[in-house]
Amino acid sequence: MTHVVLESCIRCKYTDCVDVCPVDCFREGPNFLTIDPDECIDCAVCIPECPVNAIVPEEDVPGDQQQFIALNAELSRKWPSITRSKGGLPDADEWKDVKDKLAELKR
Image 1 (cartoon, helix red, strand yellow):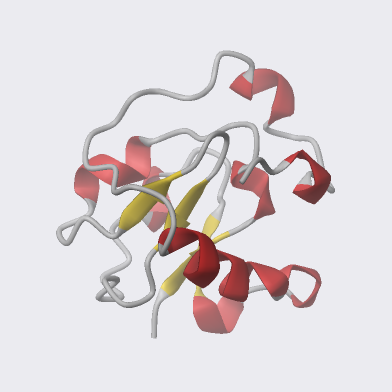
Image 2: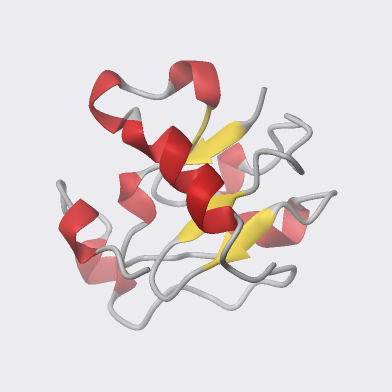
């Protein structure tokens, strides 16, 4: 079992979750974070840290976001580890409530 970063992280990339992760399972892309499913220990300490509620247990991923399970696994193999908080993207507050952002994802 693992946790999954959902669409609401796209173009926000708040990194509050990174500081509390005991196993450094977060990976950083240009405008999105992922969780490496092979590293995540399902501790859930990251969930309350996300200001846009973008992190959920895999079994709680909504039906319209199921593709993010595979996307987290795929991108976490390509992107570097992030272990310290950097703050959100400059325009994160403008994007935090926007829906349907998958087309905005930069790989």
